[in-house]
Image (cartoon, rainbow, N blue to C red; front, top):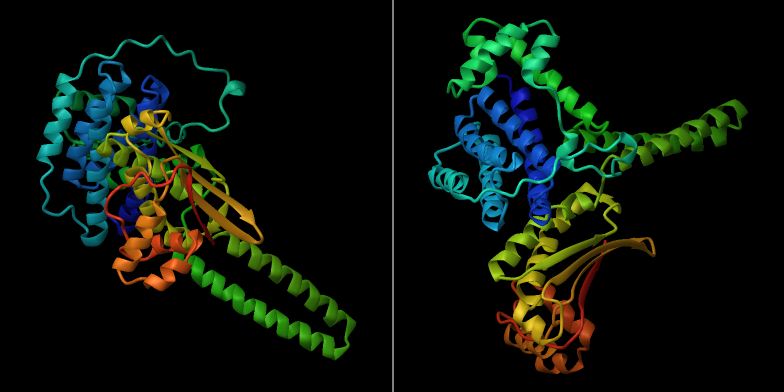
Length: 437
């Protein structure tokens, strides 16, 4: 199998798993959304089929048991509840770990996913039946929401459909292979067809390529470009800009009208090219914010809390390198906000607050900068405790602490390893931290 196909498989699978994180969190809020469930099922099914064809058997077996559970959920035979959602998120984590291992070593490594498979199988067998939802009437195209579920957008044709349309296999060949699968053969459809001599291996490879093209056509008009290639292109355009400036200076000194006009046109085109190339590195901050729904859900569940995450300014764009640089700090802030900032339901009830906490992410332009805010409606920071911890850790002296106001004390929480260790009710009000980018 070519390295290019494996790389494409890994890139697409990582995208699917990131999307599944978001979809499962949304499904927990709206478990009756059968279209979303069907989309999630299709993506796990496609991942399982591709991994089986590429020979990643452990990946295929774990995805298979998840697919079985999702099939029951999709058909309304099993109820979606927090236990099922947690297990499915653990499935996503396991699949992601295997993909990462394949990227590093080319293989799935020595791992034992028996406990996870057993957990998913137990849920498959023991969960109560879900109440049958009313039939879903597909809306007219004009009434579709502006933002479809990401899972619904990715619906490429099956390998069998592609093989038939390309004339590589007949409908009878596909039906026969599917019948073998239904009789208990665990192999992927392509493997059965190749083993029976119905198609050639290169036909399957070509069908996978066509399926990938169809996926992009069904989604958005984008392609993957390696970041190193983009960096090289940006460097070359930068050199072009320098050369263009030199030509403009030379043309102005020459006093030749034709050369001056041509040099100005070159400079204008180069400037537009530089601006366009720089935009290729820009990504909406929502690209990483969307991952925080899973983070909030996991931390809140561990702490016995319910937290709603609100996002404003998802469309604000930043350079990819900046987005990657702020991802971990934002994750740390969000985990702390849920774990230590937002009180337990009992504490919130005693304070006259709703039992569900609120975590807000906001991004906006101000003064030529991008400002990212993370705020929660918890009790706030205990400034005196921060002051004492700063002195204990040697970050500030006693004399400095007496001079420090709220802004200086708040800056201490960004010091590496700083923690007040214990949650304190602190001062009432909303806590907000922002960083300028």
